[in-house]
Image (cartoon, rainbow, N blue to C red; front, side, top):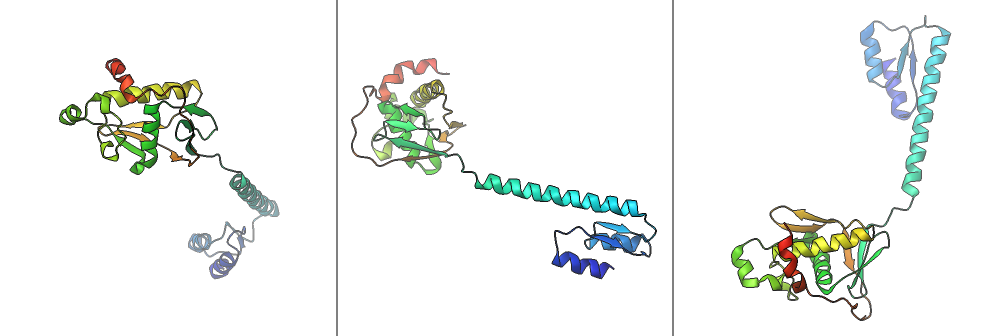
Length: 217
């Protein structure tokens, strides 16, 4: 019996199997179950009990088929877009939901840095020496070599402003703080190549927020 069960299970892995035989003790029943039987039934087992076992196996099979069908339907559903896009030459940030945020000059530079930075991370400048060399008013420079020189207070204020702006549009901006390092944009973001477009009316530089930096803890 155990060898027969093993052979049937190998050829029909999803079948419900009931082993009906006079078993020689519990050891043989255990071996039969381990080799693939769902139940072990002795000849003296009543017909009603065998019918109940068959019904239970049929119910389990139906549940498995229903679960598989639900999984297939879920896989066929189009996934929600997760890509954040910088459009209008970077002056507009479009969320995966389609909601758009108009950016200031400083915010535009910040988001462009996120889009090209390794792992979508921007470092905060923690060392006092670097802060003195770069100055608060050079928080986000246009030169690539200035990427690591970001004034902590200024970038904190800028990100705080941007989060509030996004919240007003009911957009959850995925900018996360990395303790002791800086910030990470926890999402996919890319700048979409487009023809030249004029800047929006609000083009304040990062330097404009330096006066508010003291209000940020």
